[in-house]
Image 1 (cartoon, rainbow over the protein chains, first blue to last red):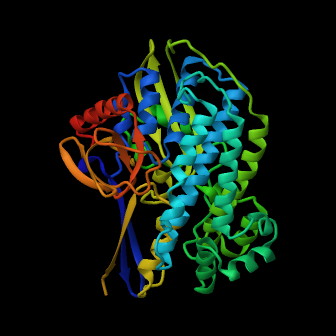
Image 2: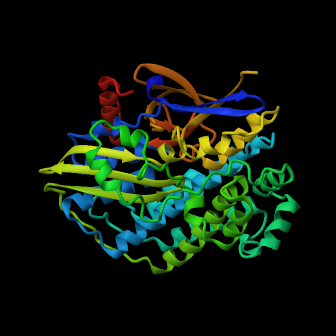
Length: 390
Length: 77
């Protein structure tokens, strides 16, 4: 089983009092999606959320979008809206999990296990409230039968979660830089404490790099690059026109007034990247409130997917843009590719490297690097090693 | 990728399960698991493997394990 575990390792080479080289190595199984070939679209839709469990909803939704595009299936607006609800619920719980599990360690505090426990069941409960037959990941659309009472209960739980994360309603600070500063200084809740600590340690701009942010519609050359990627080199180390892009909450929320305000002073540094994740939770909850009002039942499709073609599916997963591309021949998958956000953000020439290169050496270098890794949020464990060549 | 392996519970002792997948045994805490589980059920483990994250239905586990066996056999892992 250990062969299926994978991770990232970052080596910081220090010379003359600064980081002179950053080596990022990945043992992520980025080529494993090839082995989905030979299976039918419903089989693939069953495997994806189980095997890629961390962001299983996003993986399955990217997969069914790609398979529907390949087979010319057009999901109804009701199905698209319900899928958006599931995606956003997963995104909120993934960000919350990172904040409650990983951020305390950066402050030498224990993780908040009692608050983490209800997170994954929220995603399961949302699926059950929309698709009681369990067919939420059916290509073409499952039987969408909404349990409004259960959905309202999930919204209440998520609002309570946000109040716990932010120690009060995020609406109190979500529009106003001065209110945000006051909220951070009050330091109630791990999110405020970490942002405050970063600010007081003069690290708000630490890790900034030239802002090569992923466009909302994805890289223009995405589909052609995937199609041409016979060796798998592109999905392992992607670029767009030679440029490695950053894809995460920052790339999506850079126009938000609070994030934009921080970026004018700190570029893409720690404070804007961390804040963008909080803002994304707030925005997702607002969007969910609207979506939940407009949801309606839909019978979906009972037909077995058949036909041939190729298709691309893209979703905004919590950690960034997730792309799947599939080729189908007479109802059977013949080629399957996944490009995940971690391959952009932890690319050997990407934003993590650019952010750490030239950083001042010192006893807290390991901590600063861990902060930047947490801000960029990889989907696997990341080991950091400082090698002093003095 | 962060690939999760559906693992079969072979023993439970005070909230800690011994699970098996591809002949390897390991222990994992059931503390963060929302569902009730028993010996014979399948769970997937969270990143790092210290905590079971989700219960998986047997037919789904079988489909996923068949795929993961292909990944192991291919040498891509």
